[in-house]
Length: 389
Ligand code: MLT
Image (cartoon, rainbow, N blue to C red; front, top):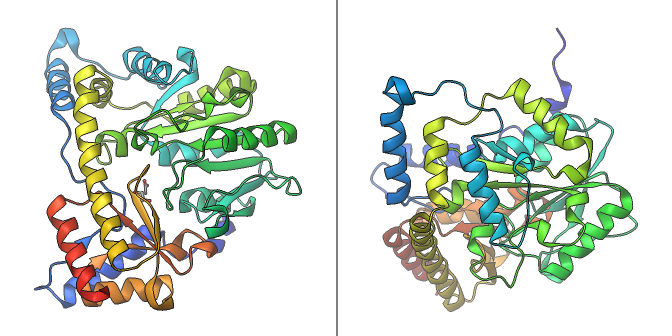
């Protein structure tokens, strides 16, 4: 056999695995020190009542002959796709049921979707960016070019007509910077993609942090987007499903063959999300579910506010936290991202994510998440004040 040599072009380990390894080494050496983890964007609040109720009910159904379910439809049960359809309608977006595909999360689909595209496509990725977009394309041997996101463009790069690309990644609100595009800015990307005949892979995993309609929740709020964009979303951050696993991908029929190809791909390589999880996900979109998840999202937003206020007092430049769970800060004293990571771990036992792990433009920056508990976030910020005030 011959191995896929493209793997040799990857960083040795996935960013969050490297961070976890460093933290584990530290705790092994310092078992008495309390480490506060504000690194990986993993939720801490439990699933809400509506979700747990639906899940219990579904578990009981699975134990009764008459309501037991075996294999489900690979693209998801209609009850959940109907719920997602209604959710999109609340943002003014009309979808057909067979444009909605239920998945086990955005990360898997963002990687899997690449099955549909030829290897000789050029991929345009903003820098800094969620490492999955880059790594999955390196694994497939595709050429990746970058759109610079930096302080000058408020971490929201716009298309450069001189750059030709076939596959374009956009994440808004953005991971890692928390910056979010408005409709006019997104329209520029849609126009650019249509001019080039390119496809936009739009990651909407953090849209739930936009609590008004001033910014687009979905790229399909932009005219022409159905002809050029596939959208990925997840219940991970929206409803605390990081361990429960459920998301959805929208492949509009206006994209031509891609809708049928994705169905073909999923029916061949995927057996669907468990019935119990899909019932839990359906409950997220009920009135009670929406009310309860908003309470949880507000809890995280309060944490973000606390982090931002502390950083202000410490005179540390930062953005984000408003439309996302991430606060993106400039490392104090001109430290590199990894220097700051080590410094913070050693001196405050606070874990964040080094900005350079998201791309070259992330060097000198650092990401904190608001997904910790209120108590831990407060304690972490007290430790920050001691170090930097
Ligand atoms: C992050 O910390 O960037 C996210 O949790 C990663 C993910 O969603 O896979």
